[in-house]
Length: 368
Ligand SMILES: C[S@@+](CC[C@H](N)C(=O)[O-])C[C@H]1O[C@@H](n2cnc3c(N)ncnc32)[C@H](O)[C@@H]1O
Image 1 (cartoon, helix red, strand yellow):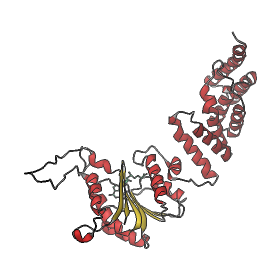
Image 2 (cartoon, rainbow, N blue to C red; image 1 turned 60 degrees about the vertical axis):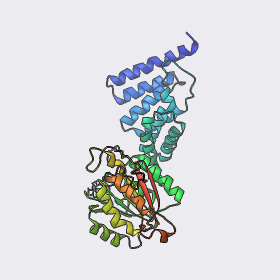
Image 3 (cartoon, helix red, strand yellow; image 1 turned 180 degrees about the vertical axis):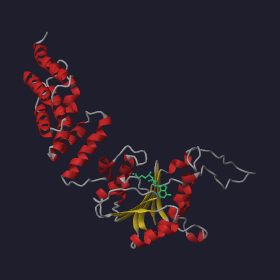
């Protein structure tokens, strides 16, 4: 048996004893005392300090937990020891340190620790959202405004199936950056529990947001005085027009339709609201692929339509899957036409859309 193994045994015995005390339900003081004695007998190992820090957190003794984790972080790792728990050294201590630091009011330490965990990428992927959220909470306490929608979504994200996935915010960040687009006014159609409204509101403190939903809840937007939350049906064109007239006398920069995902209703919204969009403004329709769902009210599984020469003549018509939202999005292409010279195509629709980007989950029309 090597010398290191002997040293580790001297540490592991009191550590196991402390763990046993904890599992038997001994008092907080007894268990923490046992972990600290284990740490003293093996100062080259950090597992006992991690366990003491965790126990403090579970007992709301955050200042103590913060201190034990801080001490644990100074322990230099010496290869594989007997019973060593690598993950504690990889991210476990930093994680305990961050959470205890937050509740002890040491927000900068919390943020630094979270950012280190995220940067070093040694923690399991499944834990990243929680650590990102902790970082976002610390940033908020420090008065650091999130610099992107994706970052802000760390703070407001929930696993609620009706709220949008975080990749959508990444897409918005990309598009806005590429177009140098910074909206001053926004109409959000479909609010649910307000997650996306808060994500936008926190990144753009000067953005006037009107957020409408068929079903309104008791949502708290007190933190965001620039948000107006209203009840409205996206199929009620008169109501939509009156909202636009009243709240957006200068026009709208950004519209996001994340409401019913029913083609007909989304088209009604588009017809009523698009005229209020400013030139260069973005009209976004989310989750348009509901048109491919058999169990969606106006959807159906994907259907192919054959196109062939007929009697030696070129086919003029290209029928395609056009159910619900899919048909609506395809119809937007008609508004993006730009046939020149116009005299050759007098019946061409008005050139209303400058660009149309259709990607999985999101279709973005830029007004001409
Ligand atoms: C997908 S959720 C919105 C999620 C939210 N934008 C987010 O990302 O956190 C859809 C919302 O649209 C609303 N909705 C459904 N039909 C509607 C309609 N006809 N008019 C307005 N809102 C509608 C629902 O009440 C629901 O809250």
